[in-house]
Length: 162
Image (cartoon, rainbow, N blue to C red; front, side, top):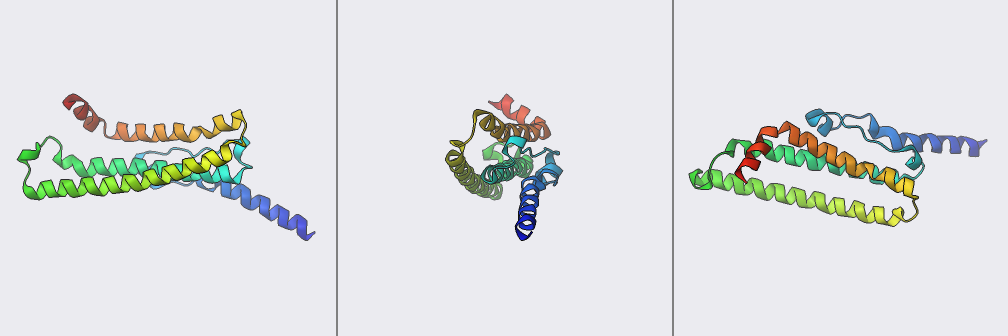
């Protein structure tokens, strides 16, 4: 009886842990729009894959918010030439650039670690499971598209200047 109860509790815990972030609104959801986290059915019974998907989605949202915040913060300097900025503004821009470069570097390290973990468990997955796993990349593309849409004018100006 104890074993059945323990097994049942373990299964419930596992199912909840794989699905808990799917309905939560993240900061990125609130700021950029809701974007579901999908853990395909064929992968729900693989804890290391569930963890990878959750971690990649957190990194994706953090990366999108980083760019969104950078654009918001730098927008006040849009249209100015460097030589027209005061020394104080140039220092602010340099500090901002450094801050965001460091943060993006930290996220890229996390991204790289996730990809290393994926390489470890991916060899045990079927082609269908790997295809399902690739949805995390699709979500990254969708999230970055949300940033692009939100800052459409900024990107249009940037494209005109290039």
